[in-house]
Image (cartoon, rainbow, N blue to C red; front, side, top):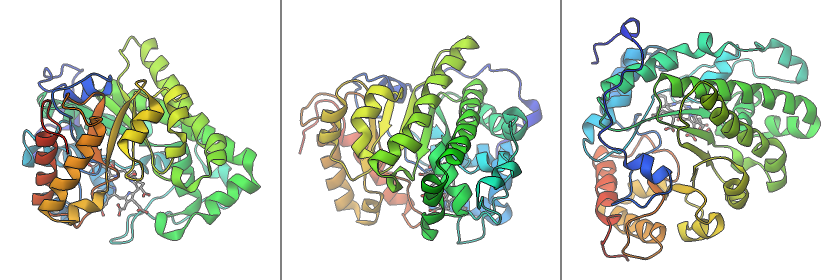
Amino acid sequence: MVEATAQSLTGNDFPPLKNDLILRAARGERTERAPVWVMRQAGRYLPEFRKVREKHAFFDICQTPALATEITLQPIRRYAGLLDAAIIFSDILVIPQAMGMIVEMPEGKGPTFPHPLADPEDLSRLKHPVNVDQELGYVFDAITMTRKELKGEVPLIGFCGSPWTLMAYMIQGGGSRGGFHSAKRWIFQYPTASKELLSRITTICVDFLIGQVRAGAQLVQVFDSWASELSPHDFQEFSLPYLCIIAHRVKSGLSEVGMEPVPMILFAKGANYALEELAITGGYDVLGLDWCIDPLVARHLVGDSVALQGNIDPDILYGGKEAIQREVKRMCASFRSNTTDGPKGWIANLGHGITPGVSTEDMGHFLSCVHKYSRQGDEVV
Ligand SMILES: O=C(O)CCc1c2[nH]c(c1CC(=O)O)Cc1[nH]c(c(CC(=O)O)c1CCC(=O)O)Cc1[nH]c(c(CC(=O)O)c1CCC(=O)O)Cc1[nH]c(c(CCC(=O)O)c1CC(=O)O)C2
């Protein structure tokens, strides 16, 4: 267990960084091998996470910097030398909580909102404006503490949910299992109120990401996990403009306080139809891919303007050692455009989060295979 407390945090005098592979790849540079991290790498597939979870409620962990730090470090310790980034332990749903909504996490059911937004009058129930330092300062404290405890081993990623994905949760009242009818009814029946809500969330995302960087995050990722629910036209109307505002305002906001921009990653799951446009106008340095697009095709669409992240099917980790090796090899060849050169502008990851049933050994095997098959000079499939 880490010993520091939130009270002991002082300034931003962090230990020097020893591994900058992911930062170089995010800038589009050619690297000696692909940096690798995994969405949800600190989570239920780890027995050490489940042990902490037995004693603490999910959001208590998020709100207690020493616990969030401990869990963020768990995969970094277990897979020492194999992971090239840590991601702060938190959840995308801390923003709806900051807006005054109650979010519960009943065992085995996933996030639940007991009082979702039913119609536009309900917007008046939300805090507006939101004081992000006050409501989400615990995430900033957790980031500062984690950054110190990481001792420069790997960079730390901060994150938030996208306006559309968060709006969908706030109206739907729960996870993907319930469908998306209520959330989508809003965009068709109440487009003006929907845009008002999206704008409010956008402002919070901007302040939240700037705060995370000021607290010590060295990259940030925006999760638009439910982009897949929108048609290309509706993505243009109800998600893309807000994603663009976030990227541009975070960068300008950081420069206003005299800070260097950090790489920004966008994971818009299922929005592969928008990759070309996102690369041109999005303002993100890295675009995350799900497993439904071939990396060669994605690279062709985005050109050299952005780095890419991803993208094998998370269920491959259930396929056994041989399948993992085979599929990682295939992914590496495709991201490396079938050359023996080192990868250029590629961060290896799954195409979405690791799921709770994966064995810790198979996760380790995935990471080792990326190290082996993404290396410069290595054979291609
Ligand atoms: O599938 C659903 O409908 C609800 C998903 C869900 C959320 N929080 C949740 C759950 C329950 C669950 O995972 O079973 C609740 C949640 N969030 C988290 C965990 C830990 C774990 O997955 O085992 C859990 C499970 C909690 C538990 O029961 O112990 C932590 C979390 N959520 C998230 C992150 C960031 C990341 O992915 O790396 C991270 C932290 C980083 C890390 O674990 O290393 C992000 C998150 N949370 C969430 C989403 C939306 C995804 C979706 O709706 O499909 C997303 C974004 C995404 O994964 O695309 C919402």
